[in-house]
Image (tube, rainbow, N blue to C red; front, top):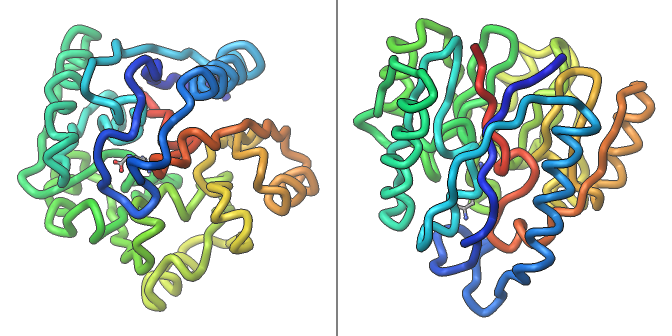
Length: 265
Ligand code: ARG
């Protein structure tokens, strides 16, 4: 399946503030390595998978704009823009809005309550799993439900290291998700198990290597090259697996999925 996605080149990617447990200003990004890793991911999407990769211009002093998954949630051409919790990231919203406006999108919502885009909202078939409370507010879910007209299943996150839903849950295919069970409250884990037929459990090692922060189209899956167990599992499922290095982005609490926003028409 050809996906249309949005990425942002890491020209200004850096650790300039600390807004999640992974970020530490003493642990700086190696810019050349970060560019290399981003180019590898871009190349997999564009040339290996043949996906349609759109680009938004990076903006100086907005180091996290590279994480386009937080720049919106797009379903059937309708755009929910982010209401960032951290003031450091709030200026990004207007740049994302401008990109969507100049690329033919016209239906927008900017939730009143905090909502950090696809990073906290993963679409599985017609169900939207929406993470809270670290970076998105549960109150935003009603707004999104009304705007998109789809069913939202709130998922409560319980470990601050996995602060966005896309750091601890992968949509693998129409019947399968992969999760780190400890990332959720018991109730939320039960809900996932009740709704999704196959729930793959990732190991601590794979999860800490950001292996769940992955992009799948059901047949192909792109994920951290350090997530050895998951890579093997997906190969056993006869998926085409594309392991990529993302260590520089993990310094910022990001990985493959965070660097990718789906543009669903
Ligand atoms: N440093 C960024 C932040 O804390 C990382 C964002 C990761 N994005 C994601 N979709 N999980 O906001």
